[in-house]
Image (cartoon, rainbow, N blue to C red; front, side, top):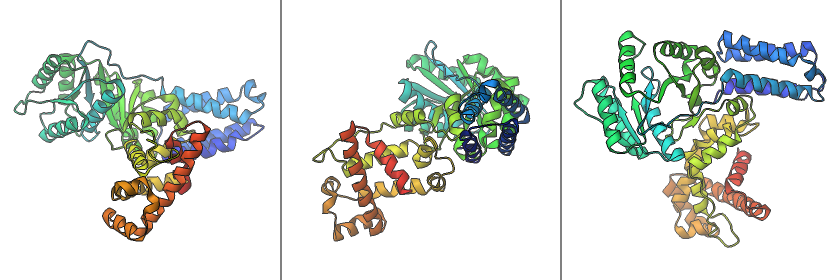
Length: 446
């Protein structure tokens, strides 16, 4: 996520952090490098200049000059001002008399319908809410069909009147159905257009007045850069928005929209789309987000992703508490639910610009996960329990079943042996999760 900006800022901050002395010229040079990096990331001039001015004023204080570690102090200032630029945390609010209504607005192609499904999944898994999905898009029947499919996938209730052609009727009927069915949250998708126009805005204003949502969220495509900022400003002027959802953040190498949109609109970013997977939506926390941009990682976010994915603990079905192949398969599948290798590495400190992250961005890490799962699925229960019995003919059979080569089977068996050894060691040191071993071995493997 935002790899180009993260790589540049990580290198800049890394060079500053180790300095034992900083002159005014050093600070100016550092800020010029930061300025160029953020301009290349498509950050708007107004928020950028405000950010740099604040950093320079604080960096030139006597406190920095007298610090034993001035470089680290300046890095801390950059992080704090980056957090200030991103705004304060604004958690999603569903504290209302049920059904609490969340309305999603946005241009066509921004990802509203997919985001509605992800939001239902997030509310169900993190807040245990009963969610209903409904759409007022009467122009694109396929969008309503897609929403129905997503509702079934995430276990949410779905409401539709296939013959209805009035968005207001759909909204009111959906609200009534949600009330009758004791739904906690009604997520209402709305129609989009290729461009903003008066007809769309009038319709959205009427819908908002009809159901009075507790959250009115604008879904914007972060890959649009400054066009996303312009879109957000246009919607914010026409509608009373309560928050923003940035989608496709995993595909945006620059990050300018995320760093500009809150400053330009005054509307807080509430959620961030981090992958195409149904689990790929997370709460936006400015402090953790700033750390990730600066290459400091987001261990809290990683732990939350693991919890949402339902990361299993080893069953310890093997003598001595070892890690069976079945345990390994469950961990690999959980990593896939967490967004894959790239999403995991993105949250680890110091991974910006690393070979591992570069390989994951090319899909190599996620492909390897899929291959490992396929190999284990081709094993018999006995082989999963005791991989030592897997020899020549068994390896060939497993490879054929997975559609891979014998060399791939050999590689997995070696990796399993290393993971099992690490799991046993960590168990002796205090029983840390096998995820730690898996992550450690994964980083070495790359």
